[in-house]
Length: 466
Image (cartoon, rainbow, N blue to C red; front, side, top):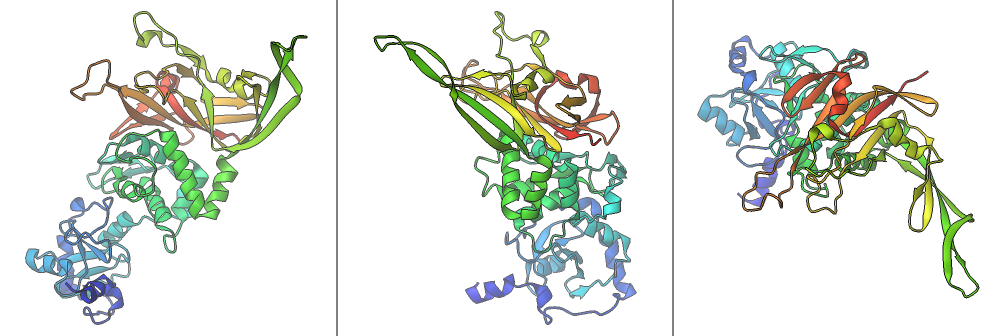
């Protein structure tokens, strides 16, 4: 194919008035028989929308009979040939959401009166109103009449990268961020924000064809700019911070929203040491130099808490003898009076501004360790579902937990193998006391009194407004 012909094929058929027959008004009743061939159970709009023949993402149509993607609709295009060869007649443009009958090229001008087509359009690109999202979550049913709660659905990806799933779900349950993304019109957006918004919209969709959402399309896009392999397990904190920074770069409005709701400010005071020498000039001791202090004011997205040093057990780590610590004890690090001794100074931390949504991170891994997962700190953290920090009260919204999985790789000794990380997220169900744990494709209810028995890694706390 010449360069000129290739360029012509890339142009949208919608812009070419001579490419197909234009039908004004509703299509004739005889052509509606083709709409009966639509099979919604074969449709999956979570996958990357590229032509199955040319692999091009431009001017893509979905065959509503078999669910495959094809480019173009003009004569001899992949979609045209598929219609002729397979007798599959009904197609939808995944961008414009216009429906066509091929190969004759008739547009189905249904004026949003055909429910089956409206449901398909909603499945491709869900839309919401402010009044509607105030009622979330709500009871919903998929095509197989399976019940689900919108917003509380499993996220799947072919690489089984749980860390991305839980980080996305955590962000999708921070209400101001969620509402902004749900109400965001897709026109004029950067590709990154468009795909993130679309993913969150599908998570909160009230008309899913299947009661799960795939993140493959989003991950395949971000893999180009993400610093690290998106196909292997990563640290969800790292992925969440990358998401926040990426959002901030492409949308000032969203950055302002994130700063307003999720960014806190911490003050770090450092008092340095000075040496005391004897008459001979030899150093006798080091004492604090109260005149030599430094104050650093720093914003933060996540507040990292240090766990107690990992104990050593003679017979190894026993699940029944794991150490426990209360969350309130860990937060004393930031009361402004607890001292942390470093080789060159004494450091104190004080929270100057608490955000509306406080994201806590529990540091469990030593990245310098040869087996960081296997050697992690498994201290259990006891926490309530309501917490007082200073003058503010917070309620727990979400809890990301970690679980180690035995590595099955052959060719290494048992001692050399590290474990794999398995990430899950526990979400509070609206304003009730119920909790739902999303573990890959499995959803289960959890008792709030038993949440602390898992290895909490990240938590989101919402400030209770007085």
